[in-house]
Image (cartoon, rainbow, N blue to C red):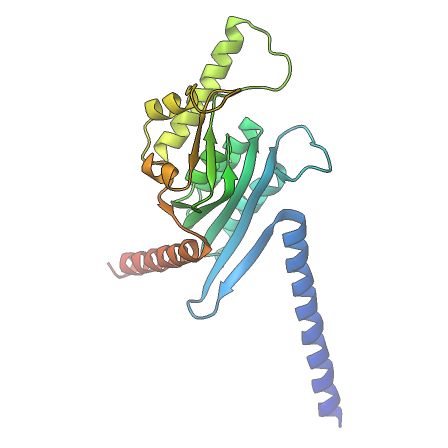
Length: 249
């Protein structure tokens, strides 16, 4: 009788733990668009991170706006790097751009991760979203996905002083330099697309759709979630095999 009651309490405790874990996963998705995926067959643990809406910087945006807060993303990336149980990172991107410094900080953090990383552009990866898309080890874009490459700008009044133009040029060079170093497009090629006057009626820049981003050398391949997941699992397996070989040498 006692053993039966003990088994009952253990079973109830397990159910409660499962419910708490499920609640935690739901809250992570709802609050920060993140979840941990575990493949039982391959025994791979993948952290899914979504970058959506506008990249929020030092100023808080409207509560009605969909945002990605860099003060949430940076600690998460540091935690992923420090967590030996996480094997790889999948990043889903659908952003209109946003704060340049914050977006570039996130891109630099992603690029410096030691774990295999794959990005998938869904909808759009505009403006500072371009460095984010190329910051991973391998990148995908869906056939209808778009990328907008345009010059750096600020909202509101900009003082027309030489120092202002120098600052913009310096910031623009940082962005194009980062993108060029993480894809097959050259810095000159990116600058040419930024200053294109024939595509956007009220602005400078270039819109690339799906395969155009691949042909320009910015994104690695056209594909969806299936291709992105398969690639990431492949990279994780290859990384594990390399580590095994290093230990045996």
